[in-house]
Image (cartoon, rainbow, N blue to C red; front, side):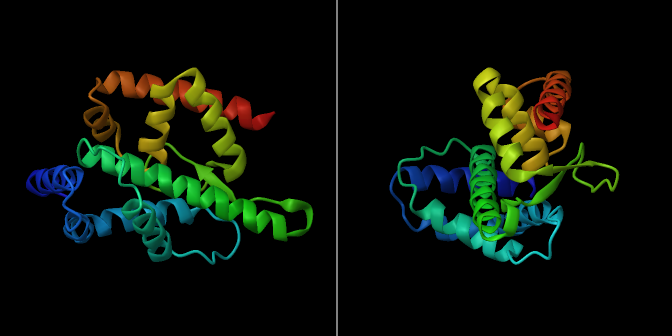
Length: 189
């Protein structure tokens, strides 16, 4: 998405804040491809044949977005962070529901990676355990948890994450490194 489109989305979000219910209908065509890319990233690491597809995940996010009248959208980055968090919650709920129906209550496994491209050597993680660890991290350090959401779940680069959070690139790198160490420690217990 280029800078002009980003500005358009931000303006539409502000219009939505002011009560223009039609703004969401204008936002979605501009962000659908990026949301599907994020959804594909989330679903890429599933260990089983996936029954939830990116389009279905984006549709569920859309349904939850239109029900969120109280959110005061700041900008495009805030929107995507919220969408990523919503996808995470949907997938955790989905994994818990699937785990409850399987013998042994196993959960879906995902891959924690450093960059948007897939790394076959990356460590496999239980998405429910990751969600629990991220919630614990957020209580200790909200910025580190937000960096994980933006880098891993939204697929932003270090530079994009720095811009979105309004912090230095070096701070993002430091938060990312510390957050990964925390998550690996939590998930290996």
